[in-house]
Amino acid sequence: MLEGLDSTKVFEYFEEISNIPRGSGNNTAISNYLVDFAKAHNLKYRKDQAENIIIWKDASKGCETKETVILQGHMDMVCEKEEDSNHDFTKDSLELCVDGDVIYAKGTTLGGDDGIAIAYALAILDDDTLVHLPLEVVITTDEETGMFGAEALDCSDLKGKYFINIDSEEEGTILTSCAGGARVDARFSIGKLKKEGYVMTAKLTGLQGGHSGTEINKNRENAVYMLGRLMTALKHRKVDFRLMNIQGGQKDNAIPRSAEMELLMFDLEEAKKNVMEIVHELEQEMESSEKDANFSVTFSEKHKVDIIDENVTRKINIFMELMPNGIQRMSAAIPGLVESSLNLGICKSDEHEVRFSYSLRSSKKSYKEYMKNKLKDLIKEVGGVFETYGDYPAWEYRADSKLRDVMVQVYKDQYGNEPKIEAIHAGLECGIVSGKMPELDMVSIGPDTFDIHTTKERLSISSTKRVYRFLLTVLERLCD
Image (tube, rainbow, N blue to C red):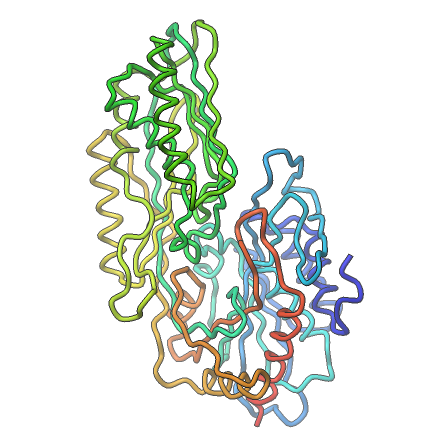
């Protein structure tokens, strides 16, 4: 599908890895592919227990005494698909498509985040004509679910002085710091009992969703949060109901695009009147922010079904009314930058519990802890169980950076203008690695990738080519 897009092998390798299922937690096949690549090219490599891969390549002639550069990305991808898609992320290849200047995957996420890092790295390792310093290519696992690969990474045999993370989504931007983060789960144990009434099914679909870091400031609605709004409004209108189940979102670091909730109602006419009025109000709120939103409501005939008891329904209702979500603080130091945020990314209910999963981000460690404690107190106060995991540090700005200076000059030479030097409200593995190797001179770059973590994800072909040329020139200039 991608044959002929470029004279280099970047797109060839991108298509190859797109044939390998590589959702977070499903790392073995892609990890083994990278091992096979290293063996086929007679390159030294190491695979660790977390299935991280490090591949070494000697410097090109004349650069042997120069400092080592680390090229880094992650092998896992966020697995989202359209509701009518039969794609199985555990075994199916992505169906790549080209539309003008962009590559996308039919019905699913594309995995440009961070497959493009692998494609760039393999193309560089495969080309013996390039001028470059000694190379250490580090490809980590499970970045999207908590940076667990980077956390487990043993850096003791790495000699890198420069570190180029290829996990950014905007050409012309050189990232120099990022937020830290953590995951939080709220769990509510439930018991089911039989009750007679009318089942109301509310579905909200068609929202934009997006990355919970880079898109958190774009006023995109959270489908689970909106269903919580519906339930809260019913409570305040004194409509008697019981929760049956609620589902929404697939990844805690993606804004939920759809959600579904079932409530048992006891007075059908009262329920219909109030629900439709509330839904109309919510639809009006979303008219500008979510033009493709679709709020559907149906009611069943009267019958006996399994419900969550009144006490637990009340607890979950209160939690969904009071739970924080979205931007919490903007940066006072960098205009327009989100400092701290939370994203309710997953809500799942089964026979035993209802679980809410959060992704927290902040460039301030103290405020990240404040958000965790705030959630902890709320969850415990309403009778839930609090769990936290996947904590990772922020990556702090470094004032003196030869790597950044070289990149700025190369960018001016190639593009004729200045790049943007920015911080990002998203988690990058730079924070974890810099904690293990504090002397690293570090940046993050990448080509234009749009709507990552959604089924609308697209990778710009022309931008991919330009950023690849930019990266090769940076590697050559570092040898000067």
